[in-house]
Length: 373
Image (cartoon, rainbow, N blue to C red):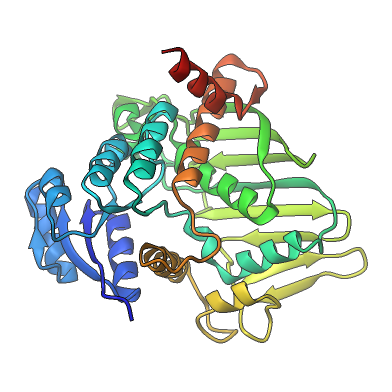
C-alpha cells in the first residue's frame, strides 16, 4: 500500500468540503487548510478534524510537510496558486476554470510540465459508472457514426434578481460565468464520451438581470452555443443559471447511425439507449454494465443510488493513484484544463464579435506570439 499523501486545501466553502471528503475516502490525509479569513479556516478545520491551519495560502504552499495542494478559491486566484504550488514541487488539484484567461492557462501548463508533478482538474462527472458505460459503447462503435450531439446544463441558483455570488463579479470569477462555471463541464463530458472535439463554434451570451443586489451584473447568465466537431458531427448546448426547477441538470445526448445515448446528471444511475424499434434503460451495477471501466466505478449494487460525492470520490481516488504512479484512464489533467480555457475564450470572442470561431486557432496564435516575442 502506498504511503498516504498529505493534502492541504485552500478555501473553506462547499467545494473544499467535497474535496476533503474525497481525499479521506481515497485513504489520504487532509493535513492542513488555509482560507481568506482565519475564522473560516478554523471552522473548516474543526468541522473536518484538520490538524493544521495556515494563516495564508502562501505559507501553506511553502510548507515542506504538504504533498498535494487543493485549490478551492475564487477563480482569480487559481492560476497564481497553481503556479506557486508547481514551483514548490507539489502535486495540484485545481478547481476549474484553472485560470481567468487562456494566456494564464498556458502559464500554468508550462510550470506544471516543467515541475513534473501531477495536476488534476475536477471534471468529476466523468466518474459516474453510466458515463463510462456510455463512453465505452460509443468508442466501440455501438452508436455507429455520431452525427448529432446536443444537450444542456441548467441551474436555478441565480434565477432571482436578488441572488448573487462572487462569481457574478468578473474580477473574482473571470469574464465568463455560466459557460466557464458549468458549460465547460458539459463540453468536457461531451468530448470525453464521444472521443471527438469541437473545432468551430458560434455563441450567444445574455443576462437575465442587469443588476443583482444593487450591483451591475458583469457576467452572463445564459450561453447558447452551436458547434461542429472534428469527426463531422453537429451540436448545440444551452447553459443557464436562471432556469427555475433545474437544480443541476447536465443533459447530454449523442445521436448516431445505429443508436442514441442520453445521460442526465440529475438521474445519474441510468443511461438511456435509444433504438428504432425499442429503447433500453441501463442501470449502474455489476450485473447491468458491460464494460470493465464502468463496473470498476460502480461502488454499490444496482438499485442503491450513487451520487455526486461518490463520483467525486472516484475521481479523487484515481487522481491520488496517479500521483503515486498508478495511472488510470480518463483522469482529467492539465491539458484538459487548458482545453477548457480554449473553449471559454472561443465562446467569449464569438459572442462579442458575433461570428463563427475556430477553436484551435487560439493556441496556435499564442504559440506564434510567443515565438515572435
